[in-house]
Length: 322
Image (cartoon, rainbow, N blue to C red):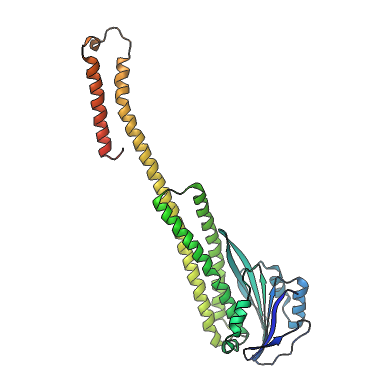
């Protein structure tokens, strides 16, 4: 069985491992509970837990498919929560899913595609038995907080990349690969922000709604998770705006560069038009042209061409076309 850990806790302290082949007889109060962690279990393994812990079949089906948006469902006296995990894989954000079954004396987490195991989280909670003694609702908060904390490194890495691209856009022009990467990051952030919305709604429901096995003293912890999600959502929105501005600045600089090149070409064309026009006139093969007999006509024409070209060059230079 793909069981990462399965332990019985009493008054916030680990008592020992438990067997999942038969139902457990825990105390009626919240002094005892079982915390089971699964990683990509099979249908048979989940059905075993369904029979032993009375899990709702619809919730088991959702946990098995692992293609759900963040949500919270109530099935009788049990709570079913789905959260989306995320991690950065190159320039792409890969997503996983963590489903949590919450009962009176059990909490079962089912991970799919998550790159971060709950082992460190379990060790951290076991080091604070006073907090763990709150029961399954505090463990649910800890799992959601662990998932949401995984969002921050993604935002930080992308933020550093965006700042580098912004600095490069101001210093020089972005090449095609950088523009493609810019739009890739923008698309990934859009998908990420679309996932954060349901996560925010999930945490808000856990904070405000009257749900099974969520004590009032634990609600402020869910408010803290909600604040983390909203801060991440705001940062992602800001990064999307920065990406748009980087592209607009790069596009503006490219237009300015093209405009400068166009002005330079137009200025040189105007300068070259003077000798071309004069030479064209004197290149006509008419027999009777008054200037043909002038002794110094050739030098006068060259001087006129040079003077006109120099005057145009000075004019365009002052206008910063050259």
